[in-house]
Length: 399
Image 1 (tube, one colour):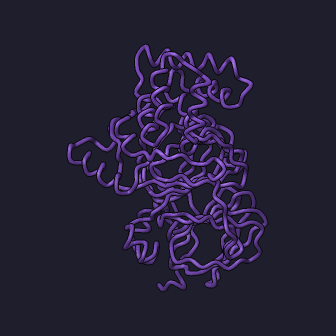
Image 2: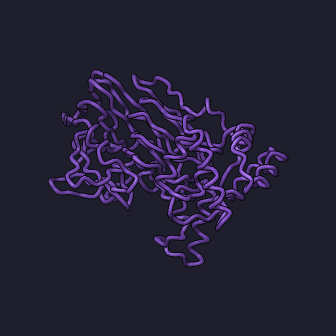
Image 3: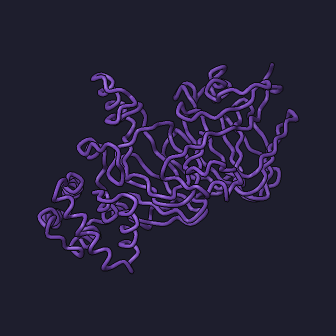
């Protein structure tokens, strides 16, 4: 069978993860995907990740996407991708958060390789609660908002952090705040961040209680109202102080943001598309009942302020779509709106997702597939080219 006669469009059956923080209603409302059990529909995974591999139909049989790729990786994901990554190098998701996800940092590729090898050597099971590195890969991410999408990303300006903590003025942490005031540098921020996350026992309890007392007295201000909401989700959590250190912003539908390695961030509430490198490495910094390794977290964090007005990722118009320039080779991401028979070239494996209207893809070999909103298609590299027609919006994940 030649590339010109092989099946080029594979409709995907995707796993929906029911993590506790997920929305019960959002994915069903946006995409008419039934939620018969009324469980949280937190993430819909589109890809070949072992923890939630999509299924496609090949010659009438249901086949895991990873198994299909393994039959001819050079042709299916592309010879260059296979040589560089030896797998589909990205995972594409719909993410619907009703509650906040943990504040987290992802290691760089180099840090992940070192950390993974170290934990493998000392024999920590990969599924152990105290395991930091699940694989030797980095996990850069892009999120594209489908609804208003509240998140944290990167450290605030140092003067802004100082102003917030001095305004709250808690005696129990005054020594830590005063030390930071006297050393408003990257090093001072690192020391302050580590010291705050390391609070425990009665001192931690007093600090959190003092913070919440201040928040209730100033709940007319959005930041302090947010901290009250987070305290109801994660009572007594030291991560309640983290929003005072990180930029808090709300993406509007159609806006996108990139999250770099070594940058603390968290998703708070909303539904969006997310694309990331194929990794599961997470170092947590609060708002979580899970394991926190503060020294390892600090060692993998870059203590640089990020200007809030520079966090959004501006797209460029390329080939009739909005293309988001991403500084890593693992994935690319584009969005197309109201296109009529647009011609697209592909040299890698692609996943298209119909956002709000039917999407029809056509190949020169005569194959045609129509997706309803909320459905996705896998297109192997050997397709080489196809056309797309959509009265609404669709997203394109590739590398």
